[in-house]
Image 1 (tube, rainbow, N blue to C red):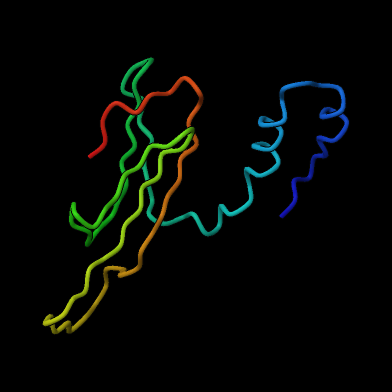
Image 2 (image 1 turned 120 degrees about the vertical axis):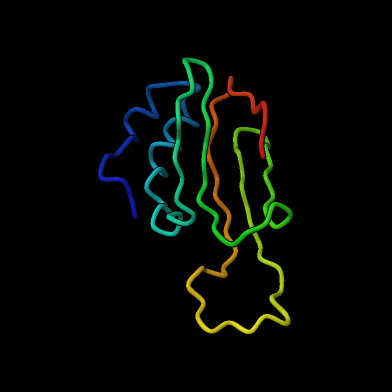
Length: 112
């Protein structure tokens, strides 16, 4: 889905803002597929934030948290459920990858 606003005239008259315009143009792309897992973004104080993800059914060793360049990536892959006889399975058994864009000055201090 393309943005309803055309940034082309602004791209021609500015220097060094290509990344900003790319982020604005692509901000709505892929958001429909990025609804799982749901998350809360919490402001702890003026300089500290916390992200809580709802990842029911995943153990700690099935979740991978990576900070690289300007992204925080949280991904999860469930292990095999061999030997378990489910009567009803209501918790999703799908893998996920959730990406969070970080500003240049943001430093990831802790992830668990």
